[in-house]
Length: 208
Image (cartoon, rainbow, N blue to C red; front, side, top):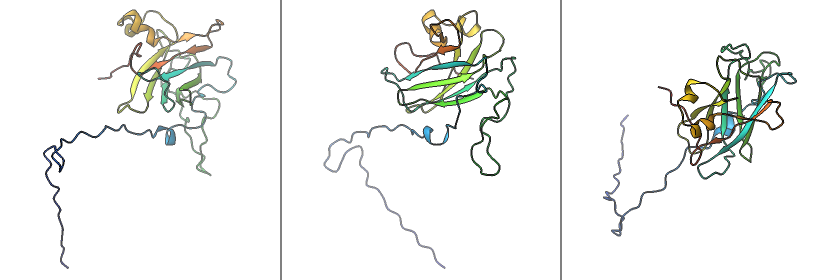
């Protein structure tokens, strides 16, 4: 059995069209957005067992460089448990062995991991327990969004104070990592906005 092959050659343009006019580069394209299809899972923002008396809420908006809300971002969160442990319990995305459907957390164990998609207004909300890590309490955040070829890492500190990372930053940049407590003084709700670019851009971390 013989094999044949055909080849075709594209004409060389040398950066010009057939009419001799210079060819302009085509517009660039971003990747996605694909995040809303497979990454979020039910109750991804409910890290604390529902009804837990120590539950706190971290919420805010994700803004792009022009100050417009980003309605299709996905945020991953990791944190220490209230006792300071970093291992976490498995089960955030458990599957039902019978139906194969999403089973989720068992309602008692603390996994330390959450995933939240922003809504149409660019808003997110995470319900969790106070992190018990040594030093200032903080929650690690990973941002995935349209236009980002690489996800971004940052931290949401629940209060200001002495900390090696915060102390290395100018006051204005430092403030972008500190969540603001609610106005009623209960410290159960914290506002943490994320600005991807522009004025007051959030400090993002590079791991090497």
